[in-house]
Length: 141
Image (cartoon, rainbow, N blue to C red; front, side, top):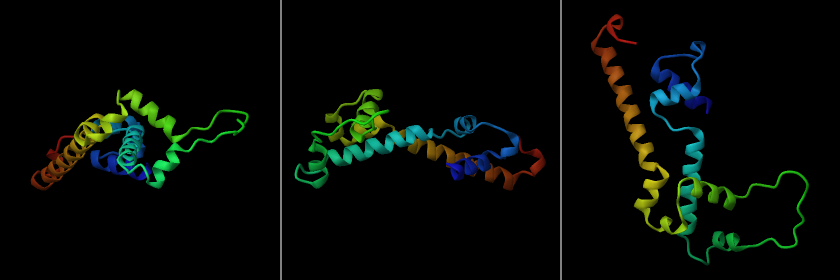
C-alpha cells in the first residue's frame, strides 16, 4: 500500500508534505480502493474454484463440514465462504454467473480496472511529453 501511494503521489507531482489524503489522490488518478481490489481478487479466485472438477481437492475441502466443533467466546471467525457470499450480495451476483467469463468479469469490475490503468498511463505519458516539449515554467499545475 505504501509503495502504491508513493507512486501515485509521484505521478501527480505531490509529496507527503503537501498533506493530501490518500482517497483524494486515488480519485484524482482514477485508481480503485484497496477494498475493491481485494474483493475483485477474491471473486476471481471464487470463479477459478467453481470451474474446477468436482473431484479436485479444493472442491472436496469446500464440501467438508466441521461437526461437533464448539464455538469459542468472542467474535466468530470469518470464513472464506461467508466473505464471498457478502461480496456476491454486494455486487448482486449468483454462483451460476461464474460459468460465463465475460459476464463475470464485467460484473466484478476487471474491465474498469484495465480502463483505469490505461487512463493512468496516458496521463503519465502526456505529462512527460509536455515536460519534454514545454519549458517547466509554462506547464500548468
